Length: 432
Image 1 (spheres, rainbow, N blue to C red):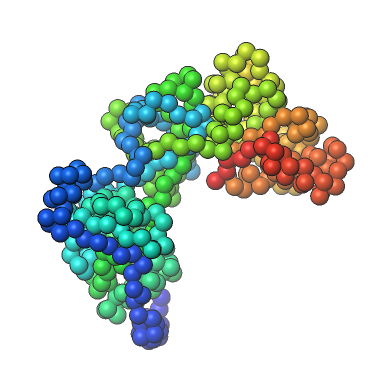
Image 2 (cartoon, rainbow, N blue to C red):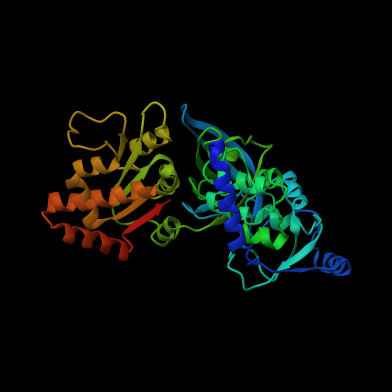
C-alpha cells in the first residue's frame, strides 16, 4: 500500500470503528471458583493443568512410516498407527486425526487475553451458542479448551482479520489488520497476529466466539483388521511447507516408535456399505485417484480371504508410473493372484496415442474409452469411487457418457440411471 493512501485508510477505519462496535461474545462461560475446582478434581478427576483430548480421541503410536513417492511438489507416505486401546476397526473406515495446538501456543494466547486467565482455570461452556464444535455443560480447563477445540496455529482468514480490527484501539494496529486482510504472510498464526497487535483487547469468551474450530482431518483407512487388527494404515499426501496443511505436514514428519498421533476411528460410507455386503457376490467397479487408492488396499486384503470372488476391476489415476503409482507391487500381486480381475492405472502425464480428444488424460477419459466394459459393471455390479470432489464429479460425468455412447441413451436417461445406482446402494462415493 502506498504511503499516500494511509490517511484515507485511517479515515475509513475510524468510520468503521465508530459505526461497528465489537459485538457481544457468542460464547458464555461459567468459571469455577478455587474451591469448586478442587472439588471437581477430587470427585471427578478433572485435570486443571493437563490438556484432556475430546472423548474418543486417543494417542496412537506410529509403528510404521515409509515414503511411497516423493517429488519436488509433494510426497506420499504410508503410516501405520497402533490402535490400542481399541481392538478392531472398520475396513475402509475413517481415521480422524486431531492436531492440538502446542502448549507454548496456548500459553502465549492466554497471556494476550484481557481477563488474564490462568492455564489452570476450569470453565464450562454454556449452551445457546452457535459453535457446535465446543463442548457444552462440561467442566474442563482453559488449557484443554484452547488446545483441542479452536485453531490458534493457522493463518487467520481475511474475514477474521477484519473482525479483529474492530477490537483494536490503536490506529497502527487497525491499519495493520486491514492491510493483512488483503495480503497476510502464510507464516503468521492467530497468536502471532494477537502479539503483533497489542491493542486488540479480547476476553476468553470473545476469542472463543471469533477463533475458527480446530479442524479434524479424516483419512480413509488403507488396511483391513482381518490381516492386522492391531494397527491402521493411512496414505498421506503432503506438500512442502508452507504450502502443506498442518496435519499432513505433521504426519509426514513422524518417526516410528517415537511419534504419537491423536486420532479417533469412525465408520465411513465405504466401510458401512462394504461391511453390509461382505463377502461381495456381485461384480465390482472400483475407481480411485491419488491417495484415493487407500480404501481399495484394505478391500483387496479382505477380498483375498474370499474363495468365491466376483469380478473386480480397479481403475487408478496417477501422474507418473515411476513416482506416484501407489502400492504398485501390491496391486500387481492382487492381479496375479486373481483377487483383481483387472488393474488399470491411468497416467495423466503419459496419455496414449489413442487419446485424441480435448482435455486431460484422467480416469474419466479412460472410463469413456472402456465404455463397453464399464456399462457391464454398471448394469450388474457395484461402483466404489474414492478421490477428490473434482475427481468424483468427473467420474460421474464419465459414467453418464459411457451410458450415452454405448447404450444409446439420452443424457437425462443416463443421469437418471446413475442416480438410481446411488439411491439403491450400488454407487458408493468417498470424496473430499
